[in-house]
Amino acid sequence: MNQPERDAHSWLRFVFTCHHRQAQRVKRRADWTVRLWNDLVGLAGEKGLPERTVSALYAAAVGEVRRTTCQRDESLSRDQAIRDIQALTRAGLLAPRGNATTRVYVLDGVATEIAEAAADAVRGFGRDPYLRP
Image 1 (cartoon, rainbow, N blue to C red):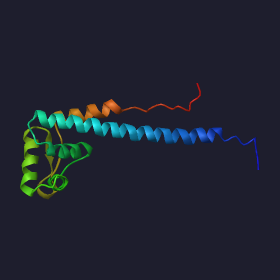
Image 2 (image 1 turned 180 degrees about the vertical axis):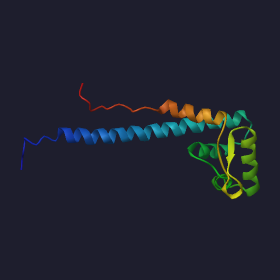
Image 3 (image 1 turned 135 degrees about the horizontal axis):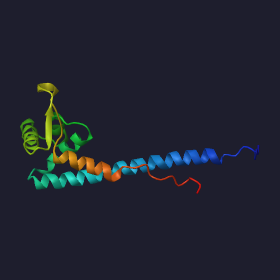
Image 4 (image 1 turned 60 degrees about the vertical axis):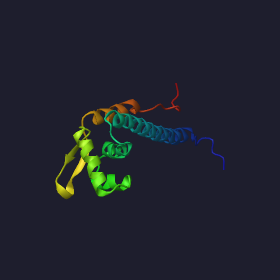
């Protein structure tokens, strides 16, 4: 049944705006991931660290990293993972938090600056293509 007095334009504009903003948010997150990963690869190279350490730096940038996570993600032995974490800590890129079984590592130093720069590069609200001029 046709009801011309019930205009759906505002509802459609709302729905399309929400979808568009979500797509922009996902794109910014993907752009951040690519930029951060590439910058961390460059940092590891500058510090003379193996490329496999980038996954530990990335995990720390997202939140925190544990030795077991580093070990699992890169299919390392326990000793290799320990050496990688120690190398990252000595290089000033990771900082330990907690003790023994609760120990985690977070970004530190230049690695923190790189993560912040990557976030700043993609930060923003995006645009709303459905706003009327």
